[in-house]
Length: 299
Length: 193
Image (cartoon, rainbow over all chains, first blue to last red):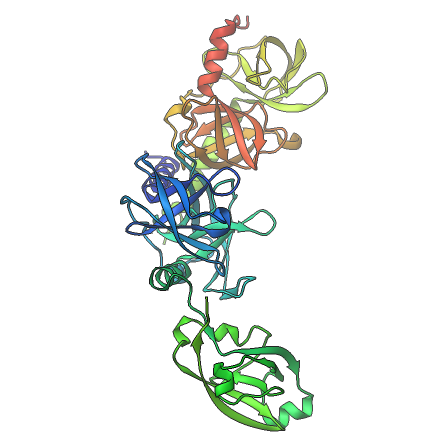
C-alpha cells in the first residue's frame, strides 16, 4: 500500500523544486541576502526596501549562474522593485489570488545565495479585502498566513499546492509573513515597466475627515454622516479647475458614500486617471454634484 | 462521499501510524541537572543516542515508552556535535530504519518525536527547510520545544534522518543521521550487554 504521507512529501518537495527555478537570490538584499521572483521574461521582482539605494545587485539564478541585475524601477507605495535580468530564467506561474481559500496550503520559497532553496510550510489563515499600505498604495487583498517567516524569504514567492504564486513574501508585523498578492504585483510591474513608476490618480486637494450633526446629514440624505472637508487646493490642479473651494465637504464619490479618511484615495487608482469622477459636495448647506477630471500624480 | 476516501483522512492515518512507530524508539532522558530531554534508540546498536546537552553525567536516567526506567551509562559524548550515546542493560525495542539526510530535499515532510515539557511521546510535523549539502545540521520548518532535544527526526516513511538538537530563528535544527553514524564509528562504543 502506498503511504499518502510519502506522496504528499514528494509533491511538496517537487513543488519547491519546480517553483524554485523561478526564484533568484539577491545577494545584497537585507542583512544576509533576500530572494526575488521571475515575474516576466527577463524581469524579476523583489522587496524594494531590502535593496535601498542600489542601482545594481548581484543575483544567483536557478542555473547557478551569478550575474548582475539592474534595479530598473521601484514603487515605494507597495515596496516592490523590479530587476532586469541579463539572461533568461523561467517565469513563475501566477495564481488567481481571488480564488485563494482559507486553509489551503501555502509554501514560502527562497533561494539562499549559492546554497540552493529554502522553504517553510503553512496555510492561508485568513483572507480580507483591499487595504492600503502606510504610504497609501492600494493592495488588492489581505492574505494572512500561518507560516514561519525566515531570514532571506522576502521577495520570494508564496505558492499554493499547485505551485502557483499567490504573491510575494515580505515581513509583516510581529514576526509574521505578509504577502503582496499576485494581482497587485502584476499591476505594479506593468506600470513600472511602462512608466518607470506606479501610476496613482490625483485631484489636488487636502482633506480632513469630519462628521455632520445628525439632523444635517439626515436632511441632506448623506448615508454615512461623514465627509471630507477640503482644507487645501493645489494651484493649477484638477480640483481648482473644477472650482472646488476651501470649506467644501466631499460626501460621496461616484455615488459611493465616504466612510473613512482614506476614502477618496481608495478610488483614485491608475484606472481612474484621465477619467471624470463625480463628487457629492456639501456647500452652503446644499448638496451639489461636481465632476472632476482625475490626473496622474507626479512621481 | 465516504470520509475514508478523503486525502486528509489518509494523511492523518499515516501520520498517526508513523507517530506510533516513533514513540517506540523515543525515550525520556534525565541528566544530572534533572533537565528532561529525549533520546532515540539507534537501530542495530541498541544504544540510546541523545544530545550532549541532555546527557551530561556518567549515569543518566532513561525511561522507555512502556514505563521501564533504568540507568543509562554514558559511553560516548561530543559537546561540539551535541551528541551522546548511552548504553542500557536491556535490549531496547528494535529500532526503525536509518536514512542518510543527504538525500532530503527542501519541502520533504519530516516528523519529530520527544517529550516537550514532560509530555511523553509528543509528535510534531513539518518540512525540510534546506537541503543538508555538506552540513552536519539539518534545518527543518518544524515547531520544536524544550524537551524534544535528543529525540528522533524522521522522514515520511518513519526512517530516522537526525537527532533534534536546537531551535534557531524559529526553525528546528537536528544533527544529521550521517553525523551520528560518524560519531559512533569514531568512539567505537561497546554495545550494551
